[in-house]
View: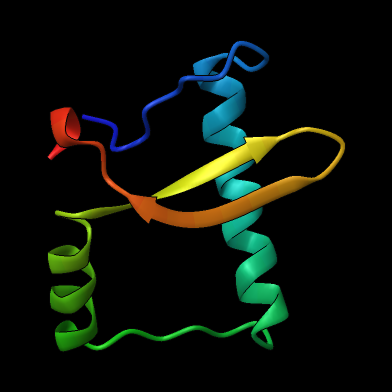
Length: 74
């Protein structure tokens, strides 16, 4: 099951999935082509995701930010 919830009125689910792949590529490229996580990093990230989520805003630019997860998605 996808962890991506698409509330966009401007992009369908396939476009959002593709955009997510592009954003991941861009992040790794900006980090010198290599990004590594430890098992403990993943554990802490998963804990944070119970109360936080990443919001992607689409417009002329693509903006990412971490926001509080809305109660109905917790």
